[in-house]
Amino acid sequence: MDAVIQCGTARIWHSPPRRIPLLALTITGLSKTYPNGVKALRNLSLSIGNEMFGLLGPNGAGKSSLMRTVATLQDPDSGSVDLDGIDVLKDKTAVRKLLGYLPQEFGVYPKMSALDMLHHLAIMKGIASKAERNEMVDALLNQTNLWTVRKKALSTYSGGMKQRFGIAQALLANPRLIIVDEPTAGLDPAERNRFLNLLSSIGANVTVILSTHIVEDVRELCPRMAIIAAGEVLLEGSPAEALEGLRGKIYSKVVSTDEELRSLETSLHVISTHLVGGLHEVRVYADSSPGEGFRPIDSDLEDVYFLNLSRHAKN
Image 1 (tube, rainbow, N blue to C red):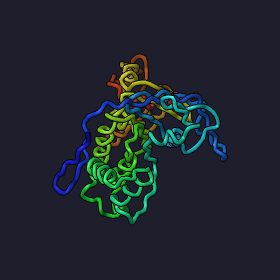
Image 2 (image 1 turned 60 degrees about the horizontal axis):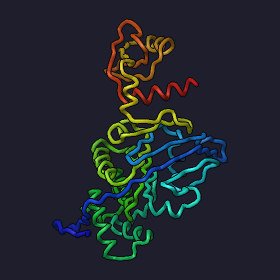
Image 3 (image 1 turned 180 degrees about the vertical axis):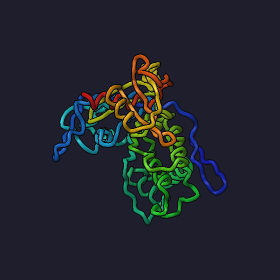
Image 4 (image 1 turned 90 degrees about the vertical axis):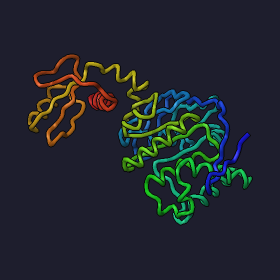
């Protein structure tokens, strides 16, 4: 039985732990071309199980188009989406009852407070009982660490506070599938950490799809992931499996001139370069040492990401 706990001036909605079956999502052969000719999705297929799933790709990869399709906001040209037996493209009402969605950009009434806005959205989601709304809204404001600023206008919120409010509105009515699209873009390091901790706590109880171009977000949160580019899946699996595939195949060298950098880019499979103290650190994929001055290094998820993007660019 749910209980309300008084904590100072805040009322925290507390429910005992419950085993809630998580959802599985099967995406098959999705294609989408917009009227301007942009091919956003190209016969894309994915299986997303009962976990926090990372969807990683550069800007323009098709991530938002995919998330909007799963969130029932647009139809594909072809393909199917199944959410635990629900046909997402045909039974949108059933999907929306299970869904919480934080798009890349979401609109709010800037003069309204977070408290009033959440109550307004809760009514729109069919939560008619005032007592139930009070408990749910207070709990979400505490969970997202917005309780102390709950009466301030949303226009005064920082970028991180707005994203945490976005999660609060996505969690109204206890959804079982949460979609978040580029949630940490533009956040400072402290706000990013706060937001990732919040997502991690949510992911223990619901299925979460995290769409981002920031590799660190996926590395820190997601047991499974996919990399997409130009509307196609380049890799699907666990970060650990992907890293194992690169063991002993990433080499690094610091070069001092642009000419040497260009020479290496021509002769070797350079997957990324980074500036280190004004010099270029070159990371190369190779089965054996690519030459003098190179040293083997441990691979990281960024290497997996850039290797797959570089292979796709060459095809």
